Image (cartoon, rainbow over all chains, first blue to last red; front, top):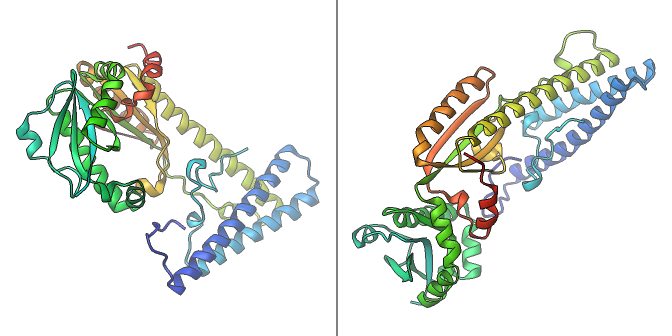
Length: 97
Length: 266
């Protein structure tokens, strides 16, 4: 996602597939981070039961591992997953609560 | 060839002809010239109208290589204008239909341009950037402890707290650098930090500031930057400085009155 924007549209099929994968994974990573942030906030607040904590934590852990696998499959790093939103800054800036 | 008049800068100390003659301006344009507008002088160039029309120009400036060539040509023109004394750089590609229009436009703003020249005289711009430590995101799963859901959440919570504290501490250091440097500056401005894509490094930029410094205080300022760099360097925060620059950041005509009020007391 960080490749410099060329003047012409690049229609190399390999590259298009990879760019699309990176875009989809970026969106998935955004949702994952949002869910994790929400879960951590509720964990910190202590409003979850022990069983809920375990279920949520396990789900997030598995999702995290799955993201690593998907990134590896497409030759991407987690840090590649981002979008520069211009004046708004990066999509995944993780500004904290 | 139809041409338009491209103005680089306005000065009250026009550069000598031999300096103008050896400065190449924009590609395809004529030699650099000086136009008089009362006590002020404009450094201009005839530029081909075909390349500098609204559409053609917008298209060219969208291409990074053309943008760079254009910016370099503009900077050469501005440097030349400033070679004999203070100059007010005009925005890149400031174009007029002909010389008369350019002279009229400058004459109409003579008062603010002279105020700006006085404000920039014997002062230069210094750019200071502060970069934070690389935020290598440690995976939550990589931590110690049992691999159950609750301990995952606990680690995620701890990681977020550490990251937040680290971010706040480095930002505070960057702001402290800015606060300290403003003491040596006549004026200061903060630009939006450049993206990692633009800087080509993987460390986040925390501060992208420009300072207008009296030439008489230059040594003090440079020494202060050096000391600050040493102080914050211990926590892997990097301070870099470049300059002296032509004060582009402080030459905004429409901001001249507002900026005058914002000057920090020296």
